[in-house]
Length: 106
Image (cartoon, rainbow, N blue to C red; front, top):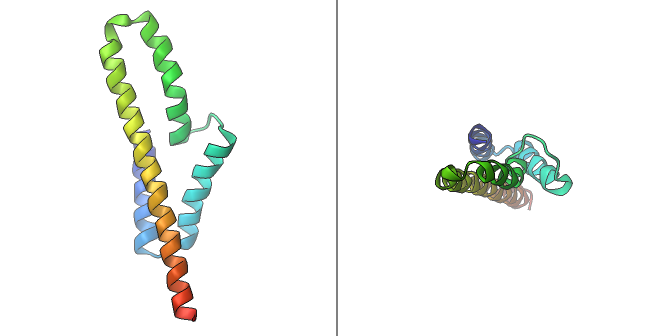
């Protein structure tokens, strides 16, 4: 999950510095596809959605690790939020590129 978030941040950075509208749309499209279909695929949101039930089952049989389980869940939650922030950044990039194009053409 950490690697996925890092890749998402890197792509957002490239989309911003290169004014790459297509890359920005690709990031948004992938994020929305995971949200809409709720597929259990290798996406940040999908991992986050499945983490609670996986951790709950594990901690029910390993009650001595509940403190560690809560820390892991908080880490997963924060990584998912970073992924959401990346999507917000990309949406702003798309808005910026569109506004720039309109200003130049008008």
